[in-house]
Length: 439
Image (cartoon, rainbow, N blue to C red; front, side, top):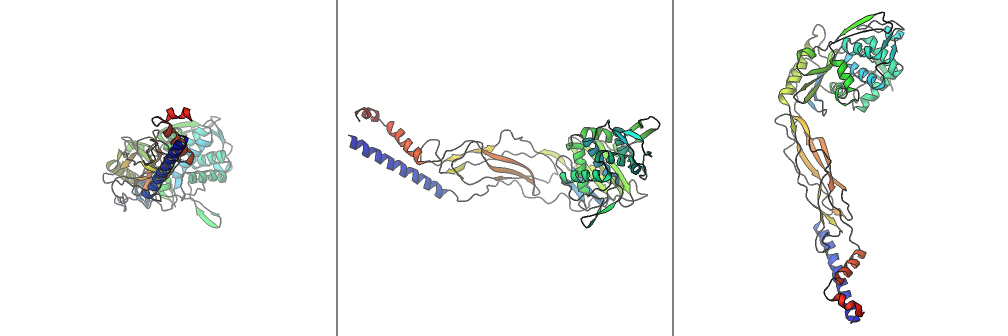
């Protein structure tokens, strides 16, 4: 009897090992031996929304941008480097809000007092609240207020310029270089190169996006730039000042809520501003928008750009439920325990991921969805393991990606597991337990 049981055990062992090996080999033959991409494309890549100046703008450089995503909706020489005049002051303002306190006392230096018009007309040693100077800066565009703020926050004009340039780099504005806090035309030599105080329309709009929507001090920035008029005095109460907001668009266009004008002889007229309409937020930047006496050109261009955006682009949720295939796992243990069955693991987008992608799209635009997952995985794999990505693109640009996770795991098939499984199966065979006591 013992001899018969031994022969039976050996036969079962050889059968199961052979079956497992065959199953592993079969999985290896059926599976592709490299990772590939499974793709679900919805529509084809579209050409850029706009390729020429169909609006016939006055500005030498201009951009209309989706403030929520930074996507350029309309551009004219938007990456051309140009001086930007007092639109510089949006950066001066936001840095002052982030690095200073509105209740700070700021003292005018001789350098600040000597700044050219447009200026508040401060005297050396005169003291003001930082809050009051920010209204002076953004409503009347006073150059001396800008210098006082810069020296207070940065320690010097040069120190503040370093803060400005670092923030520009942080925001991805690689074509922007700041020298002055007030936007006066300037140049300097650095690293053997002559650098101009300059930016691009695209970079300037990105900075505006940060000021109105991303900075922790955005509410303070918006409160200042939306104020129509403001009055204050120096801290000794000897002189009183009144400021009026020169952002004419606030009163001439519904939804306009922030902006800054600028002018120098080198820059011409410039403007950066923002408008909200039906849940949509647009920013624009205009550089080189005429020279005297064409002061109103910027308002014409601003209205054209904003109206173009509101008429052509509509907010859409482009999220789509994507069908994800099960992934075969090489060398894994099937959940059923049967080695002649392939190991297939399901996957999905994480439950905590937000299933909303709101974009401003023109009617002819369509988003493509691409799924990147491997054709095969090697055991062991665990539940929750990241194995791929679902990517949303618009005009070839990635706008959103979601990680793909395994919804279950699979252990690796080992000799120990096979032996253990053999004995379990053997002991479950009819009549075996009745034989064991006689061993």
